[in-house]
Amino acid sequence: MIKIAPSILSADFARLGEEIRMVEAAGADYIHVDVMDGHFVPNLTMGPPVVASIRKVATKPLDVHLMISPVDPYIEAFAQAGSDIITVHAEATHHLDRTLNLIKEYGKKAGVSINPATPVSAIENVMHLVDMVLVMSVNPGFGGQSFIPHSLNKVRQVREMINRQDRPIELQVDGGVKPDNIAKIAEAGANVFVAGSAIFSQPDYRAVMDSMHKNVRDSQKNPD
Ligand SMILES: O=C(CO)[C@@H](O)[C@H](O)COP(=O)(O)O
Ligand SMILES: [Fe+2]
Image 1 (cartoon, rainbow, N blue to C red):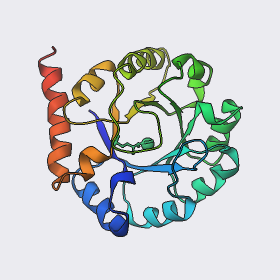
Image 2 (cartoon, protein in one colour; image 1 turned 30 degrees about the vertical axis):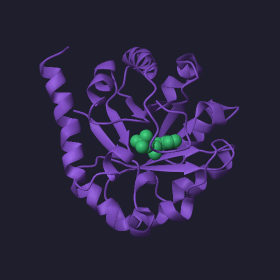
Image 3 (cartoon, protein in one colour; image 1 turned 120 degrees about the horizontal axis):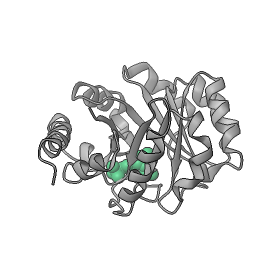
Image 4 (cartoon, rainbow, N blue to C red; image 1 turned 180 degrees about the vertical axis):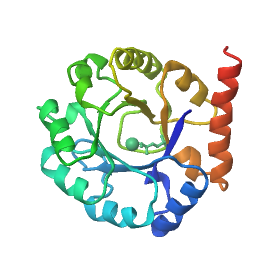
């Protein structure tokens, strides 16, 4: 079973509540919220007040992807705003172990993300602390970029690391995920798929998510 996390970065912000209700009705498993600071990534998006407003509308877990540095001073605000999963970048904090523990102290699920140029070894020593690993398949900062093919190797490596743990850890992929490449990414071992432009650029959100599920199912039935 795969999970789909629509990234609201590509939604119509003027109608954000309605967009969230629509993707939830269309089968979203998580609502993916991209937080950017104009420093760690070259773009600015939203902060805790917007997450708190989304919380009032969303019924699915809020999957908050923090692309901000420093990050520790903001964990409390994002936790109190109603995030369910808080994902931080390994590259954005000097003390990743401390940052992940901080998220857990607030009772939230902790995710760790790595950029395309970061080796999976960067997170080897924090696997015991995380509930989710996010492999970025584009350089973070913008929606609508193309999937970087080398990311598949990293997904395979992270899947092996997860399989060595004695508890379930989600493996999320974010960036350039589309109905036509999702099966390959699932085969590599991912189970949570962020998709922004692929969903919100189409008039029928359910049709996109259904085709994502179908393509993964078909490839599982007929490998190769
Ligand atoms: O974190 C990010 C970008 O930094 C993503 O969540 C994007 O918003 C995904 O958008 P698409 O590549 O699916 O259009
Ligand atoms: Fe994201």
